[in-house]
Image (cartoon, rainbow, N blue to C red; front, side, top):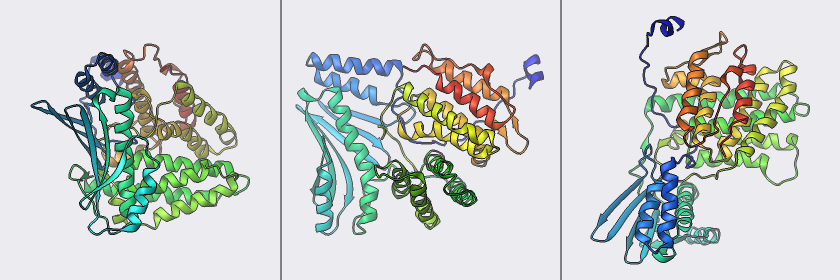
Amino acid sequence: MVLDKLFGWVRKKEKDPQIPFGRYSDNNKSVQQVEQWTEADRLFKENNYRESIDAFFDYLCDDEQQNVEIEKNNGIINFKLYQGSKLVRGHIEGDMLNAEIALARMPEPSMPVMRRLLEMNFNLYYSRYSLKGDIIYMRFDSKLNTATPNKLYYGLKELATKADKQDDLLLNEFKSLEHIDVDHVSPIPIGEQVIKLRYLRDWIKSTLEYVETLDPDKFSGAISYLLLTLVFRIDYLISPEGKILSELEKIASTYYGKEDKNSSARNPSMIAGFRKILEKSDEEIAAQLFRSKYTFAIVVPQSSKQVSEAIETALENMTWYRDNNYPDIANEVMEYGFAYSQYSYSLPKPLTELFKLFMQINHAGYFEALGFHTKYYKAETNDFEEDDIIDRIELIINEWRPKYSSLGFKTRKLRFDTLVNFNQSFLEEVAELNLD
């Protein structure tokens, strides 16, 4: 690599596969898109309602996702917004905006289903459930003169994200219901599916086996870290939907719930949750692995301070494990610090890109199995590709500095002697990033 740089030899890098990871973040808007939001607000205040909505859709559009489709014809605007397994279909005519999602087909009337829909209706602020023929819908509508950018954003977000979550849960609970309007969803390639199933099972089994070697009382905190980190890793790297995602969220909520239990009491419930996933057949799990597009994040942005505090707390808590010869636990605790933010918040794009790099280094074998060509770290020989890591960091920082003028990353402070020391030095810099 040194000779390459001295003599200007450049090896053409093979392209990595286009595999999305983790939860979609809509906290990735360009400067131009943010300006469109401001423009939408200005136009609405000037009573230019349709022009305001045009600017609003420009704000929502993600060029990578191709998540927004608009069609105008004789004064009528038809639009589609993609959100996972669900598709928002809407139209604007006269002074009204109407949007709906076909949730499921109910071939035969069902009192239990109707009761459940009525219960769920009480938890909705902008939208509502409805029944037309044998199709269950979610709907949102607004007069144009009240359709502020804020109302449109939160109304359409509630409609899209709730429907995307509830359709799978309803279909799993009520076997009489049928899928509908899912032609836009595509299964992942078989090869990728096989790898994801293998790693999902391997990660769960190896974690549970390691947990069994630890004293459940003395190491209750470490066990909690291992289990929660596993939730976040599967959520990000495997990216399951539907029932599997719901099971992961239940495991996490077991720990973060309001019940007054210590780690020793919570850990067995989390372990049971993972065993429940292991009991599922490959076919059941594979059905929850698919490709789709997204418009809204299911979590909300937080300040840089919140992310920094999560990372700094993890760095403090890993110290004992590092100093007492538990490097694997130390690394998992540090992974938790960054992964918690990726799971819980809608992160700015620079952070999501840095998190992906962090995971590529810490789980290099998984990325290699998926066909990624750049091998940032070889665990068996403890070798880092220092130049590639630094180049990737600088590319991320330079790409997003126009939006975050104070963005900087001191790559000279990175340590490449051990994975523990690298992770610590990397996360110390991430915690210092200024993204406000």
